[in-house]
Image 1 (cartoon, rainbow, N blue to C red):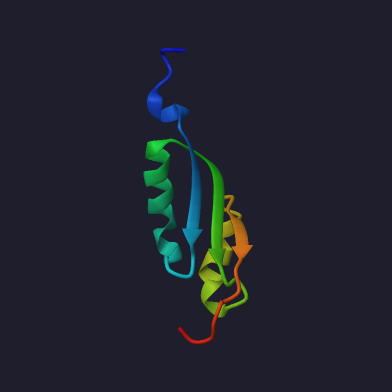
Image 2 (cartoon, rainbow, N blue to C red):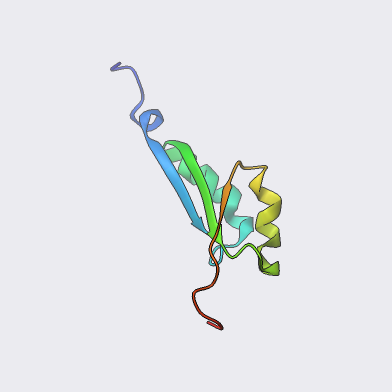
Length: 77
């Protein structure tokens, strides 16, 4: 048990606010999080009914992300 690397023993939850992070950053986010430990939960939060989320839709299956639809709390930020 003492031979197990500390990094590989860490379990991480990756929770992404897709309304405020571009999908093009996902490979970098995954790489950096994987350097810390094992990602066991992968969720992406956002208003998936909007057209701006199309870039995230393409990556959901590829990166095993669970989409969590969050409708906007108010109109017009």
